[in-house]
Amino acid sequence: MQQPMLGYALVFTEQYARRAAQFLKRHPDLRQHYLKTLQLLEANPTHPSLRLHALQGKHQGLHSVSINLSYRITLELLIQDHQIIPVNVGDHDAVY
View (tube, rainbow, N blue to C red):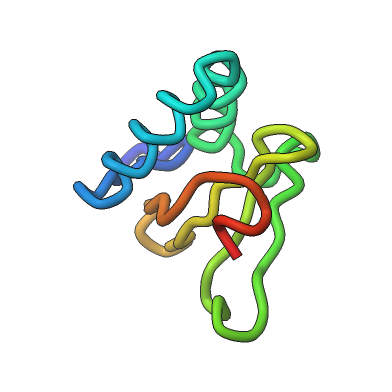
């Protein structure tokens, strides 16, 4: 019998990796918050502190989680495959 999958797998695209590197270069003080957000996202994307929500309009099909009150990560959440694909990271204006 197969074990149930625990958590989710983060799948990083090259484009997102570049965006994240630029974000962390501009905001080195947020590195710990950013890493904690990713760890929590893998373990439990519905954790209340992430404030996960679906996006509307031109970003329909994507979700957003909060790093803190000012910064977000937009992502594709593929529930059936237990994969989370980060798309963008930055402040509200940058990711929306």
